[in-house]
Length: 128
Image (cartoon, rainbow, N blue to C red):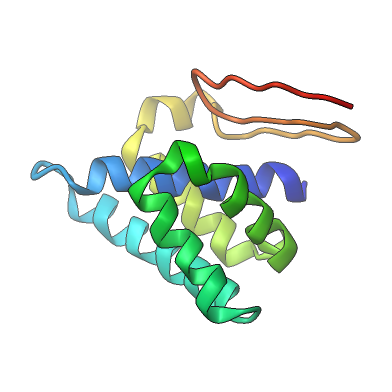
């Protein structure tokens, strides 16, 4: 479950960033996004605080370029096992995309897999 939970957190950060900059974003979206950001900062600061937390800022500035690095840092920090962080990420996605949440779009289970991506419009090149 850890891999899909980390991808869920990364996806919530992206969705929250996009929705949060809009003037029409609801208070629920902004609050949920702030909660995920805070949880990620706390988690990453347990390790090498400066370098790890800067990944979050780098991801916010250029998500496509820094997605893998942030996901790896979150995975190493145990984000997949952080129930509060995962719940906050689910709250962001529920606030940003209620129909997708209702349809179960963000309930993903992956086991014994390599190179997993969660989300829409992804591309990936794998070399094993």
